[in-house]
Amino acid sequence: MTAETKTELTTVYQVKGMTCGHCEGAVSSEISELPGVSSVTAVAKTGEVTVVSEAPLDVEAVRAAVDEAGYELV
Image (cartoon, rainbow, N blue to C red; front, side, top):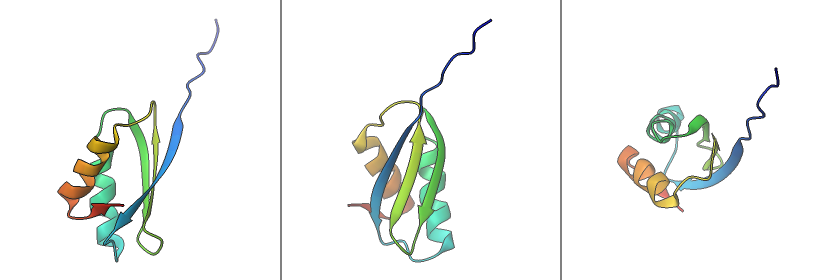
């Protein structure tokens, strides 16, 4: 038996408008719903959102998710 090697991709996005933990949660929740996303970490202080996914994500899908949360992908 051989173990499959699962490759994950980490991408960091800049999001404008996050100011608190609620903002982080809203952005993380929306992006987490995208297919292939395994984890999302948003940091309001830096505006950075780190996304771990199985494959590269469509930037327009990420933009739409961030927009749905009420923020702007930079």
